Structure formats: C-alpha cells, structure tokens
Image 1 (cartoon, rainbow, N blue to C red):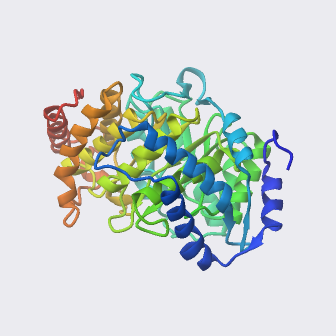
Image 2 (cartoon, one colour):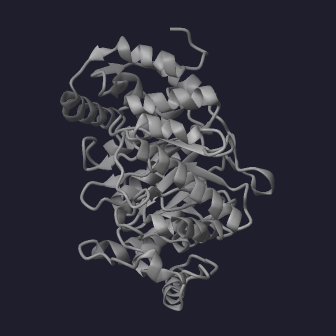
Image 3 (cartoon, rainbow, N blue to C red):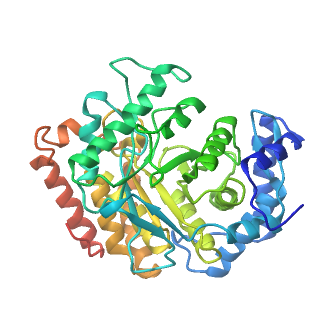
Length: 461
C-alpha cells in the first residue's frame, strides 16, 4: 500500500469491491462482538464508576484498542456484503491530516470549530436545532427561528419535515427532493428573519435516498459551501451505498463533511468498554476513510433510546478523552433525551451531557432531540439555550468537580426513565405570534437553572 496519501471515495469503494465476502449477520453477531471483546481483554480496559475518566493511562489504552479494532476489523458494506481493510499506519497518518479548524457560516455570522483540549475554558461550538426530529410543515419555519434567535447558537441543525404540501412523502420520489429543498429554504428564512443571514446550517434531514441528499447541494436552493453536510455511518462499523454516494458528491463539491455514528450500548458491541472501543474505531474511520472534517457520535442506550443515561455518558466521556489526548480531530456529540420539552428532566439531561462534552475536550455540541427525537413537534430552542449555557458554565471545570455534579444529576433523572416526562409541543411552549416562550415554559426553565446551580454548576439564565 502507498502510505502518505489520502484515501479517496473511489479508492474506498475499490477496496470494498476487492474485500472479503462476509454475511451481515456474521458481521453483526460474530465479527463485531468478538473483536471488541478481544480488544477489551488484550488492553485490560475496565471503566470505574466515574462517568468522566480520571485515569489517562486507561484512555490511552482505549485509543490503542480503537486503532487496532479498526485495523483488524476493517469496515463493512452491507450493499456489497464485503469488508475492506485499512492498516494501522494508514490510520495514524490519516488522523494527522485531519482538519484542526473548520469554518462555519459567512460574513458577520461566520464562526470556527477548532480544537479545544481537556478542561479548556473556551466553550464548545453550539449547533441548535431539532436534530432530525420530525416537525410539522406549518410550523417548521417558526421552530427553526426559535433556535436562530438564541445568541448561544452558533449554527442550525435542521429537523425533518413531516409532510410536503400536506402529503406524507416517500424515499426515492420527487416529493422527497422537494421536501429537502423546502427544509433548507425554511431554515434559510429563519436565519434571515433573525438578522443572522450568514448563520451556518447542518443537513439535510428530510431525505433518506441518495438523490434527495445530493440534491441538497443544488445551486440557489441548496446548502452553501460554508454549511455542513450530515453523512451518517451505519451501526456498527458499516457504510452503505447512500453514504458512499454522498461522500463522493461532497468530495467533488468540496463540502464541509460531518460524519456521524450512534453506537448502541447493549447492542452488537456489548457493554460500555466494548461500545467505547467501537466508538473510537468508527470515529477514526470518519477521518481516515471518509475524509470527514469533523465527527459526531452519540452512544444510544438499547433499552431507553437516549444518550443521557449514566452508561452512555460514560461511553461518550471515555471515547472523547481517548481521542482528545491522542489526536487533534474535531469531535462533537448528539443529544437524545428521554423527556420532552418544557420539563425539568429534559433540561437536566441536557445539562449532564453538556458537562461531559465541555470537560472532555469536545469541540461542539448538537442539541437537542427531545423525547428521543421521535415525537412530532416536541423540540424548542430553549433546550439548545440550556445546553449551551450549561456547556459554557462547565468549561474550565475540573474532572473531579464535574463527576460530583454528574452523580447528582443522573441520580435525579435516571429513576424517571420508566415514566418519563412527556413534555409539551412547540405550539404549547411558545407564543406563536411573538415566538417568545410562554410564562409557564420560562418558569420550568428557571427552576432547572436553579437546580443545577444548587448542584454546583454556576450557570447563567
């Protein structure tokens, strides 16, 4: 192999074509769990009861395990039924070429995502938006405007348009392409209405097919070069044709690429340590194989479907520290809470993940898919404000202090997972004329601020 060169999408595809034939069930039930377990045993990786690791020797071992996991396992394409390989040398050289700084937005609204390490005092960059949660067509613009009007929000993360002209649309139809265009147009109007026309956005989220996602780059109506393309991996350690074609399009167009993956805690990987090993491996793959400018993860609890559980926060924290102390790659996390908007539980779930991200050196946060991101219209700009303010307050905090607060926070909301607070819809949380939160929502927000302040997080309203 010719080391020292970037692996292009065409080379990636050729390697998959030449790869070893493997059934998807064998990959899921044998290759992934067995290799992850072997790495855990070889590197003697065992997490303590602390959410944020206090032992860098442990996270250095986790990083090495992730590198070896990717090098020995490779990556799988279910459309081809084949796995490709990558060498350890290519991995280490690939992460050296990863960007240290990415521009988002334009003009006076331009800002940068750049490396921040450990307990840096500079707050993470904040993406605010429905985070691919379904939003009704008639209020989509107003929902996006609720994020764009928040000063703490540095860029928008689009939601999924629930209908187009009142019609439920399907993948691989003209309706889907028009839905993507409408999603982007509404978000564009939202930032203009808030006096922030250059604000960046991340998308598209309303299309699942290759055609609809590539159409997001159409001139005049699509995403701009200063926006970011959301390109998802598949669980676990998989990439399909849709992702490959999106990568090819973005590579040719020179787009900012944000790769995401949401490993499942308790799924094919196994427990917390094995999930973190796979998380590190998939993160490295984004930069080494897929040419990503930045990478987002968000470990999902197999039972609860959230990123805010103690177990998934532990995976999130250990993965971040392992990569933060061994690379300069740009990392973010995606927020999935159990509770819905305008509930104290939802805010505290956001606070816990924001503290983890701020103290483990992540460069950006993406908030928030309330009510697990599956309930129509259960998202508001107030969750982004709360998470952004919490991350801002936690920046510079010691790991030990953060762990103490996290113990208290998770102790409050985890027992409520069996009967989560449903929360309210956007229409119930905001005055639909002024787009300001109603008094009842403001009171809940204020109570949540007071609670985290009582726990030791010096958060501003």
